[in-house]
Amino acid sequence: MQVPGDKSISHRALMFAALAVGTSRIEGLLEGEDVLATAAALRAMGATIVRHDDGSWAVSGVGVGGLLQPTQALDMGNSGTSTRLLMGLVASHPITVTFVGDASLSARPMGRVIEPLAQMGADITASPGNTLPLMVRGLCPAIPISYTLPVASAQVKSAVLLAGLNTPGITSVIEPIATRDHSERMLQGFGAKVTVEETNQGRIISITGEAELKPLTITVPGDPSSAAFFAVAASIIPGSDVLIANVGLNPTRTGLFEALRMMGASIVQENPRVIGGEPVADLRVRAAPLKAIEVPPHLAPSMIDEYPILFVAAALASGRTVARGAHELRVKESDRIAAMAAALTAIGVAVEEFDDGLAITGSDGALLAGGAQIASLLDHRIAMSMAVAGLAARAAVTIDDVAPVATSFPSFFETLDALAG
Image 1 (cartoon, rainbow, N blue to C red):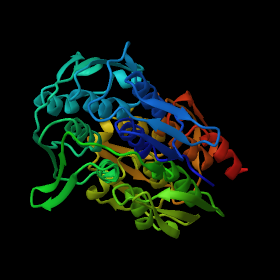
Image 2: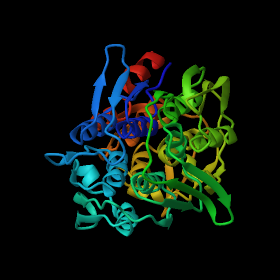
Image 3: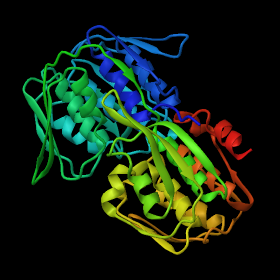
C-alpha cells in the first residue's frame, strides 16, 4: 500500500518554492485540504501554482520579500500548520494579512507564535484567547532575534525561521528539545544559509536573512503520520502482513515506530534510501502480540501526532501502558488526551487520564467491546484512530463525522477497506 505525501514537507515545499526566484517542481504532494489551503493562500499573495495532469505541481515564486497584499482574508480551513508558518512568512513582509479558519482551528491558541513574531516587529491583532480570526501587519525590515522555544514546537520554530528569511542579519531559534527538522533541511536545499549547532542549551538553528532562494525539484516522501495508522492496524489484526511503500523516516518523526517496536511489533525497513535529503524506506509490518510499556517522554516530540493511534495499540496490548510527556496534545485539532480517553472508555477500554497523557490497560489481544458512537471533534487523527480500533472490536464503532480525514488522507477509508477486505 501507499500513503499520501508527507503533510509537513508538502506545506513547506509549497511555501519555500513560492519564495524562490524561478519555477520549482513538486512530485508526490499531499493533495489534502490542509495543503490545498496553503496553496490557495500563496496564490493570493502572488505565487503561481499549477497542478499538471501527471500529478506534479509547478510553483513559480515571487522571491523573498516579494509577497503581495492579498485582496481578502486567507481561509486556513482546519490547518494549524498553514496558519502558523504563513504568519511567520507575512511577519517580515510589508503587507497586512487576515487569517480565518473553521470552528476547530479558530479555537486553537496562536499565542506561542504571536510572541516571537511580535518581538521581530510584527503587529498582530488576535481574537480573545489569541485565536483566529487574527491580523498580521508585517514589518520590513523586521528585527532579527534569538528565541528559545518555551515548548517543543516545530511550527513555532519554522515560523520564526520563515520570518528570518526576509530579515537582515541572523535570526536564531534555540530548541532545548529537538523537533522535526524539515524546515532546516529544505531551506538549505533551496539555498538559504542555515546552520544547526548542538550545544549545552540545546540545538541552535540560525538563518541568515535577505536570502535568495533558488528553485528545486522536490519529491515528497510518504507521510509517516499516515503510515502509523496502518502500522498499528497490521500489528493488532491477526494474520496481517502489510508493506507500506515509500515512508519518510526522518529521525525526528519516527517515535511511534520506536515505541511500537518496544511493544514487540514486527516492523522491518526494506529498501532504505535518501530522497531530497530525507531518509525513506518501505515498512513491512506483520501482526505480533504487543506488550505494555512506559513510553519514554523523550519520544514525545517525534511522535506528537501519533499518540492517538499509539493509544489504540496500547488498548490491545498485554498490561498497562503509560504514555506521558505530551502536554502538546491538549492544544491540537482537539484536546486529544481527553478525546481519546472518552473514545476508548466508550468502547470498553480501561483508561486513566493525566494532564500530559494516558495510562491504558490493554486487552491482551482480545477484541474490544466496541458498540459506541465516537465524537471525532473535527479531528482527523481521532477519527482515523478510532476506525482502526473498530477493526479490533466485537461490535461496531461508529464515528460521528469523518469529513476531517480529507485534511490529511483523502483515500484513508478506501485504503483501509482494501486491506481489511
